[in-house]
Length: 373
Image (cartoon, rainbow, N blue to C red; front, top):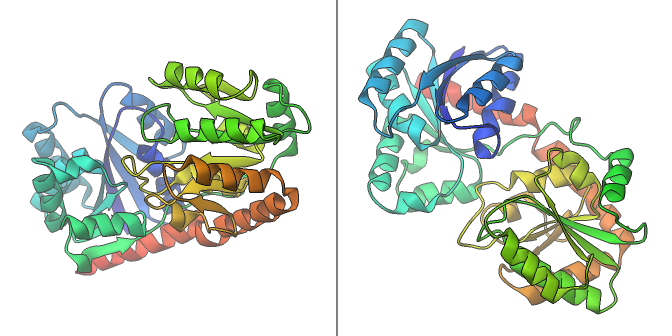
């Protein structure tokens, strides 16, 4: 089978980086795979990284949001390639790639990678509904996203298929040397229990509640330290909050971290206190934390409860509650054997339910359905 993907890229990372994992895995299963990268800003880095991984990536200048010339170029490319299926990712690719696939008379699949609020208003709602009609199958990366598609009528219910993201647990694994280096780098005492959060410093990520919960736990005598990895517009406000909520050194801001695996290995618990207004399409970083054997402290938002098994691989609490975060954190800090058991269970869950092999197998089944429908 031959499958062509279409995705806009302005850089590497986030949900847009999914094809960096998916496309090489599809090729390893014998799928003839290529991708049209609709480049903007630093999108060439995405193209180059795909090519470095052995993927046939063809750059197209993205241009403005609605670009008839881009549709024409994509149609010409698809007709020349004659794939069995075209697979689009994210709204810009849906707008252009699905129309081009229809013009070339090639069946199409569209992946929905989140629950962005813009789909609730025009013109995006109309674009989303059109994508649902043009695509023979709509892949949702979680049950949460599938519910969003049904709620807003962004795809006929019988066309929606849930395929969770996959992760290579051989590359995301416990690493004692990385743990030692990370803790040494940030001056963490040997007896401290480290809570980490790796997220952009923006509204909705739950940093405020987490900082206050950690400050309260430390004042009550818990040997806890919080490492905040990431940059963003709220850094100054969060630093001020940390200064007023906890003693110096309890909360450390690391800035941008280029090795998230090493950072997570240096933690004893990894937190994802997301608030409802932001939502989580999947919670990939929570899965990464589980793969390195760390218990996860998460909120019951979006798909996080699908990824984190409450009481088994971590603790899931109501969003926005400092009291709930404090109670859950205190319990984890006081019970190292529980943390160890949750970390081991989380890694096993990542391997068994969220592997790259299982993801690609399910996506290939969706391709077969789309091609036959």
